[in-house]
Length: 86
Image 1 (cartoon, rainbow, N blue to C red):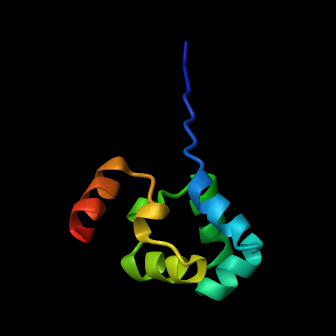
Image 2 (spheres, rainbow, N blue to C red):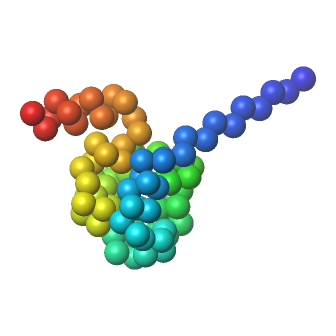
């Protein structure tokens, strides 16, 4: 018997910030200069935004007016960012 487990880590923080900014995924990707499909993958949790390149994170944060810690889902990275910001 084969058991398959599919875990999806939807990035609700990223999605919520985008929606609060009044942007569609297409608008967000365009304004940030990020590929639409890649951006959608970040929101859907298909790609871990914590592993995105720093310039990509900064582009997204600049459009949303938020900090990197606001969109990262990896707890260790969030804690490291908190220490860094002190």
